[in-house]
Each structure stands twice: as C-alpha cells, then as structure tokens.
Image (cartoon, rainbow, N blue to C red; front, side, top):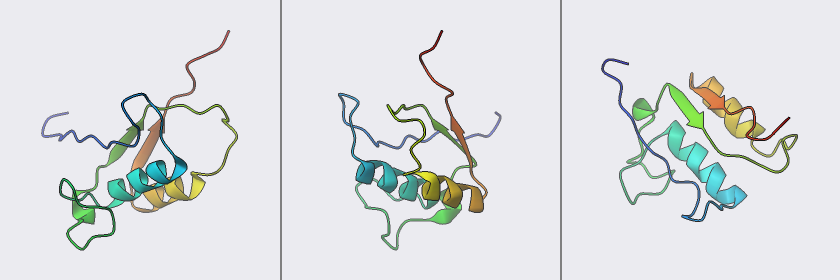
Length: 91
C-alpha cells in the first residue's frame, strides 16, 4: 500500500520455537512499539506507532487453545486487525 511502513516483531528463536511469554510480549510490543533493545512497558514505547494490521504467520499444535485470546482482544480494542493463517496442513 502506498505510504505503508513494514515492521518485524521477533517472537520466536531462529529454530522457530518460542514460549508463551515470548508471544505475549510480542503482542504487547505491537500495542506500543518500543525502540530497539527496549522491553515492552517502558515509557519510551509508543502506542501511536502501533500498526493497523498484524500478520500472524505462526502455528500451534493446539488450534483450540485460548491462551492468546486476551492478546487478540487487546489488539482489536486498539483498532488493530490481527490476521492469522487458517492452517498449513490438511487434506
């Protein structure tokens, strides 16, 4: 899109693993992006820099898990659209 800005959020290690805490912190960062090396919650984090859309291209072995529902609800409450893949396996 014209004028769009792309940003990356690291929630997983280089081998593709991550903890639930890592993922919660990544969602928190999206709500108020921080300067490099600054943890979410720091006063320098700025909700005005939050994206409008978040592409969540990651998977789980338990699609019915609601662990991250509060994170998704917080994104929606902030006016951010969280996009998720429908699955990478299937018939």
